[in-house]
Image (cartoon, rainbow, N blue to C red; front, side):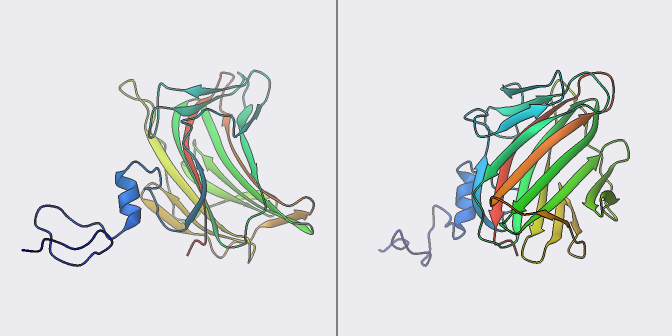
Length: 243
């Protein structure tokens, strides 16, 4: 008797296995890092399994950014960011890409709080020949809030309260953030942090001068004390055509 269907078919009854009609689910089961929010088309990602060579590393005096195998969101490695031991000192990562096809773009990353965290900042710039369009998101740890930049100052994301879990039982807890931006209409679109989502589509952004076209992403932390701040970053994902 016939059993199931051909490899390319999703029809027919199968008694010993289950079919997978969603190829995104298949990729997730095979170890893809794109599992948090599957909307949009992936254009690039970095799981830090191959080092830090894709990133420009920077910071105030005394910073250290290293490839780390002690903790990871997935796989066996992440990026450890450590600031100098002065309050408000910063350290972070920057990556530039070619100018994208303009559509709503998502930038996702995971982080684990370790010590002396004041702010985490995500800055995204899309520069064309005639203008610079920039979005900036900040996590204010002391006040348990996210903020977006507009008009030269940070404004609270309404109805969203969040506190990063500290290091515990010798390990760390990774949280995942996804910011979706709209370079076509020059606005924010939405923010997701773990199980919470905020609609930011009514908020505009600040414009700057144009120049060589590119897409730039910057992720950094600021320390809260005259001691080194430490955080871990993992699984940075860029998407386009976000709904």
